[in-house]
Amino acid sequence: MVFVTIFSTSAQKKAVPVFKNGEAQIVEAFNTPEKWIRHDLFVETTFDTDGDGKPDRMHVGVTRPYQTETEGLKLPVIYESSPYYAGVAPNVDGVFWDVKHELGAMGKPRVHPEVTRLGERPIISNSQIQTWVPRGYIVVHSSSPGTGLSQGSPTVGGINESLAPKAVIDWLNGRAKGYTEPYGNKEVKAFWSTGKVGMTGTSYNGTIPLAAATTSVEGLEVIIPVAPNTSYYHYYRSNGLVRSPGGYLGEDIDVLYDYIHSGNELKRAHNNAKIRDTEMKNGMDRITGDYNDFWAGRDYLNHMKPMKAALLMAHGFNDWNVMPEHSYRIYKKAKDMGLTAQIYYHQFGHGGPPPVSMMNKWFTQYLHGIDNNIENEPHKAWIVREDDKINDPTAYKDYPNPEAKPVTLHLTSGAPKTGGLTTTKPTKQGKETLVDNYSFSGEALARAEITNHRLLYVTPKLTQDVHISGVPQITIKLASNKPAANLSVWLVSLPWNDGRRTKITDNIITRGWADPQNHKSLTKSNPLKPGKFYEITFNLQPDDQVIKAGQQIGLMIFSSDKEFTLHPKPGTELTVDLDGTYLVLPVVGAVDSFN
Image 1 (spheres, rainbow, N blue to C red):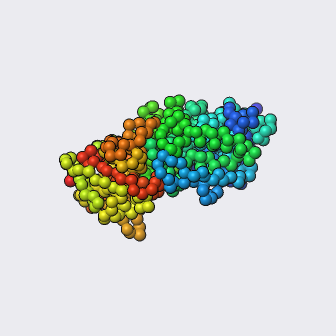
Image 2 (image 1 turned 90 degrees about the vertical axis):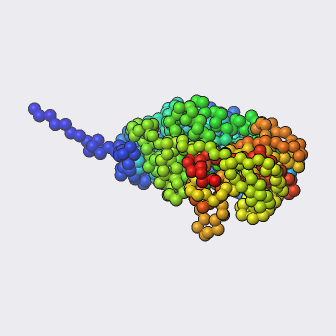
Image 3 (image 1 turned 60 degrees about the vertical axis):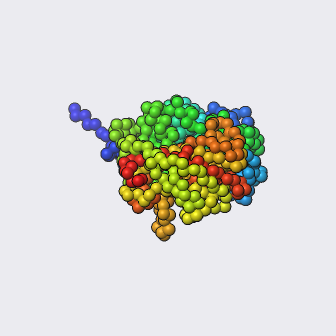
């Protein structure tokens, strides 16, 4: 008797992920949008922030290849969460805080616009889907607490915004319950999930992966945050100073709360009273700008100890909205903790994820388990150079560049024109005074040949390219004729480029802001004694930039920054002791170029 084994056609044609050179490839059987299964559900959390006595449920959307339904295929998940999916508040007059007032005072009350919720079930978002589903992933989205159809309240960095994505990941691993309806009891199981999850997103959507990772939730293997806000203090304050994010003068944490509060209209009054009008009002402190417990609780650096997910961080060096310090501080801490971490920087503004190929390798390694040697990669930093395309970074051993050495630059007098920056420490340079006037922009001050509204000190023309890599630091010895003053510092490349093809890297190298009242402590400000000199040291924003030969590096010190700080009445005088003021630049080689 002859036995014949018959293989089913369906068994022969079962679709599986395919990998080449350590990357998941597009599989034609998965690349069938018309057959993708799209559905939504509500995942139960462990918290109740809208005060209805029931655990808040998060609205979750799923997009998966049909083979996860018909062939028993299980796949890993790429997950993005956001407060923006269901719409945001309109930008009406008065929504931002009034910045035209004296330091230490409050602006007039602001307007609280309501969000008209957008979106329909079951589709929350289409982001990430076209890229990852054809490559053998399931894509999951969720609206963050108090936004869209997710229950609860937004807290803008509160613990519920960490526990919400944790609950979704728990559900993907069978540890939390999902339901077909927001208040129903019919359960939904993630039978198609392997339990391995990677998170990504940009800006607030990039903050949430870090928030989830701080919970050490099992199953979250890798995060790729893009331009994430890692500390709301660093977003709305700077070294004790009330400072707005670039492009949003007068924004503060309660403004962002109103902007994203698209959840259930019936719950908004409770949420506003508890979160915005009590917790935020009592904690945000627009009077002193000091760091306190409210801000510490919304600083993810303070909560990283349990984190174990691999980290690929991404940011732009010219992001003046979520500034590059946000990514650098988390990357540095992750390395110090021994986590697998790399960083991708480009020379542009807000946003800009790593190349798809790079992200693919990370997701392939940690979600599919294909060893492509990421953990042993000799290069930890990937930087898009000034003239390169954003998807063509240069590999470096690390960031800051390990070859960078500190170069101290001292000031020589020149006000109201231009003084000098030199590696030789001069003596008896005396003191120079500027007069605050917010009506002049930083660019106008940097371009002015003569003005008493800023102090400007420049190097000789560079004899060769200068590669800055790391975190510049400034020490300023100053006195004010008033008890409070803004302090702003720009590092610029001169002459200012007037060409039609000006690039974002042509003029502003980096910037920084500080409150001289916080010269001793970030948590306690003390009024300045008029005429008394104080020494204040603070970091400028991280940078990695090559300043071309023939340019001059200029250090500009001024008071109110029209685009970022409060606008007190013009006239405050700041006097700088030149002998007690210096700049430390991290430079890769070419030290002789400054002389």
